[in-house]
Amino acid sequence: MIFEVAIGDTVRTVGIVRKGAMFHVDLDGRTHVVDARRVSDAIVSMLVQRDGSAAPSRSVDAAFASKAVAGDFDVHLDGLAIPIQIRPAGSFGRQKKAGGAAQAAGPQRVTAPMPGKVVRVLVKPGDDVKARQGLVVVEAMKMENELRAARDGRVRDVAVTEGQSVDAGAVLLVVEEKT
Image (cartoon, rainbow, N blue to C red; front, top):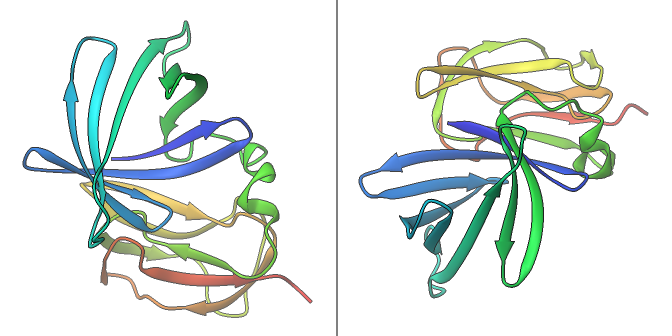
């Protein structure tokens, strides 16, 4: 499943795939293997390991307090209360992303949030694109996810074709700033 998680003004895309008793969580192109256990209705204890990393696992205990709006929580972590919002991918307006990656300089590398298949490529090299414009559609876990431009620009490279299988984190296309 693919979600968008808002923490303050930053919205991040998170892909989650269950593999046996573990969860493979893709965050910004990095996969984390998570062993999560529910301690109570509101508390989760997790061991988090970066996939392929030799670093030791990190133990994370989090308590969740649900708010009136579905998908809104206060996460209590390391003594801090952190308000978050969790929505299906594409639910947040891009105005929230303006505080984060949308204003970053340089090319935007559009990557696959999780393993899947490219269903449609909506642009070609040289095309001008606007913020929020659909670029490519990837099917993962029988759900189609349209990946969109974070800001205005021009498509520099398209690295995939329709029907192609892709791994999590694979670069699908690159959008550069217009000069």
